[in-house]
Length: 363
Ligand SMILES: NC(=O)c1ccc[n+]([C@@H]2O[C@H](COP(=O)([O-])OP(=O)(O)OC[C@H]3O[C@@H](n4cnc5c(N)ncnc54)[C@H](O)[C@@H]3O)[C@@H](O)[C@H]2O)c1
Image (cartoon, rainbow, N blue to C red):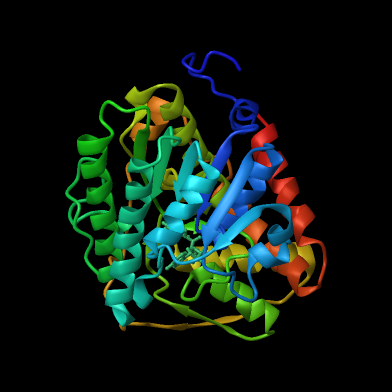
């Protein structure tokens, strides 16, 4: 591995770092978890997952990850079960992504959302406190942890997410920071949090997400309903987000001074409106696959969300030299391609593995 402090961490170094390391992903059956599992398998890491059983359909199932990695299917709120896994597996690196991740479901089920996102984090931290194996822990939260105020948000902004989901993630952040300073300050374990903008990529079957709605409309041959065309969200590709997470976990493992909180998201030129996103998706399908995609616009006032979310990502760019590598056009194009392949029962797994090669092997 080359000198990591020479401002030039290359992608191969990241994969090389994870080789043979025991990595635990909580939430590996979800959208991001499945992509992260694929990358870590490519890196030849010893990867283990802990999450609820996969939904049907899910990327986890479509890619056959159940047969290619070790999984524990259990609830993150079940401390005893999680603790057994830590004792059994002795992970060195932990990515915590198991969560109720949707704003709308947070409004519908606030108690479940708080319990999953707060107690889940608490249980992971308690397991780490009683197991000495973990050297690097990354808690994946969201750009919604900040109190609404002037944007773009910086890491030092006040944490107080507006709605139950966002607020539960603010709490998760605060708990992590408290454990870091009270229990892990002088320990071998480095702890950070990653506050990510909206991530897109093939195989995301979650509800209420713009490109997931587009994907479902294509699969079902239906018209897509676009809510809130003027909302601007910091969208970027899941591979860029995961490369950022892997970089933080690696760098703090090597040098504890890199611990902290990091915003991750697109450069501001990539933060575009819902309407523009749909247009790029539609154009890709029509141009490359001769598939006609149509949508209608309906405004939705059922939840209260900021119309615009912008993030300042200077910290991770300056300290860790991370920045998104895929343009918003390429990121949306990847989702359109995955959708087309899936609809036509073609090989989506190879497409994902090719994308990982492209992002992690190209300099
Ligand atoms: N996708 C995004 O745009 C985005 C943006 C910012 C932050 N995040 C965060 O990233 C993480 C992953 O998001 P995602 O989009 O992959 O979500 P997802 O819904 O696809 O996956 C969630 C995962 O958490 C697991 N999980 C949920 N409740 C659980 C429980 N009680 N016990 C055990 N496991 C449980 C699920 O089984 C699944 O594996 C979440 O923490 C989310 O808040 C996502």
